[in-house]
Length: 262
Image (cartoon, rainbow, N blue to C red):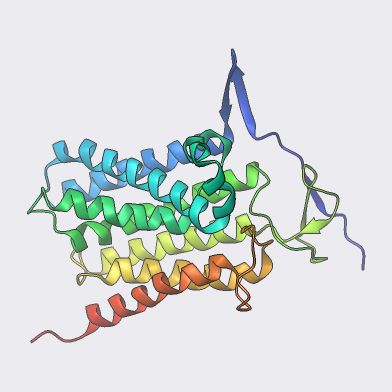
């Protein structure tokens, strides 16, 4: 049965101001952090944490996310090129951010921040940031969709999308799949947070986040065009291999959080 597939040909550039491009991806990325700050403001208010700490926390988060995501992309997805052109690592405006590296960068940034804030322990921070990160992930994947990047393999399913800036073949809109998963995780985490009256067991929210996001990410990789410039030779792609430690950590955190204390 033939379908009239949806054709996506949107420009990644939202508007040009002089010689400067404002891109959809950048707008979604910035919106993710703005909404994250809003959610953390509500959490800090509810749990009687000082709101004056939030600007510093957001600075740690932004630096950790960008640094981790960029380095992971360069080291895991195209290492030979970046070893040969090390200065190109700093050309973040040309694209190339890996979500696994962003997650690792956030964890390192939160650890560094928590060392200076005894009233905001590391695992407490990670649990609450997980809620905002899930919503941010949904927005960032929409940015990938507008960029016509991280697209899927060929398919003839009725919801396939033709990314006209790539080719004329219908493909899995894998960016939208991941965006929906992240949005679902956001609502799940919010519900769990409220269920425990804003005091969930330590590690439960971050465990749910890691287990849900990276388990689904592992399986969605089968539908995506491989991003790495090489093959692993293991039957799994790079994205799947580096998802495994995160999803395992998530299940461990959930199990430990639900274990009886004493």
